[in-house]
Image (cartoon, rainbow, N blue to C red; front, side, top):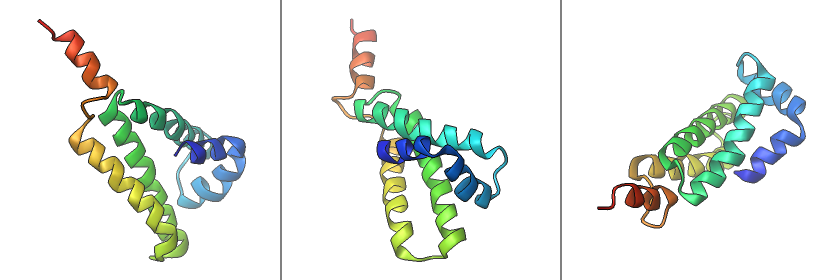
Amino acid sequence: MIHNGLDKLADVQGFADNVVTFIGLPYPEFFTYCAAYVEVIGAVLLILGLFTRLNALALLTTMGVAIFFHIKSNGFQVVPLETASLYAALYAFFLANGPGQWSLDTLITKKLFES
């Protein structure tokens, strides 16, 4: 995800024109920056286990938009949908299950509620 976000930041106008405008969202540059920063910052925070469910929801939303884009542009071809669908399933898992025992969320919670 971090790589995908950095690719968007490397060519904001190209992604805005070729993807966001094609989908039909307003303010294509704004949504390009939103997606890019969610993919970079959200992925790093998810790796660390900080604000896990919030980041999983944000990343799942970006994958939902990616899946919609692939269906709109290529139909139901497996190859473009496969990666976005696998990422979406992974983020749905973290959204449903939350952070693990070694996450920063868990460590902070333990520190806050220790007796």
